[in-house]
Length: 293
Image (tube, rainbow, N blue to C red; front, side, top):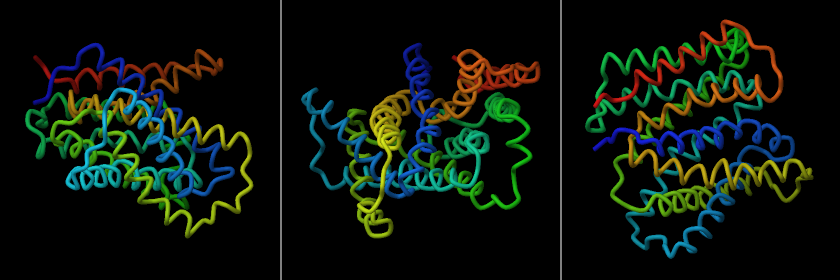
């Protein structure tokens, strides 16, 4: 049953937003040296290694049941392999602003799927208005350049991000319907299954041993794997299993919001009145999406 979000769930959602929000920048830096499949394989295996150390330190073990490994593989396909590969490839052809705008479609897809597959997550007028308002707010925050760039020569890359958003929505529903198991164990098994599954293809197609990799690319890949993949996946499974898929999908509204705040407060970027309107729309959309007691 879906629970009302507690303060700690909002804190975890904020941390998840930071981890996944910085992933776009880290991917862009790492792609200067690594091809897409190799980069995805590395981030999955690095994340799995970090979580495995934490898991064993806590006295936990990966399950031996073949059924659980089938579930881990399914979770990794829908939540890691498909979206990571599509987004990483798409970022070669489109801007991070466009990718951020299109990722805001995740709450809409999740809302529709959760209505049919998750108890107590039915579509309501308030939730529908919330996701629409949140998406409009994100469109305002990312700016007119991202909107003008939709369609045209980069259409295939944009459709790849849209396909990634649907895959994320499926994964949100899948994760919520899992049998009971520690979130850290689920996260570790999922990343390990995905990394092992993708690595042979990456080695065969991209021959990464021939690459000349810069120090910045290695650092970006390490941060991407350890924090934006490993720790973020652990937080994700805790939040989605405790609160529900619609709540965790709101991260796709929070990431552009945090990007806007960081640009204004840390980089001194110019702030316009219309951006505050977008900020207000995002906040109102998030509020409308929350279940009433």
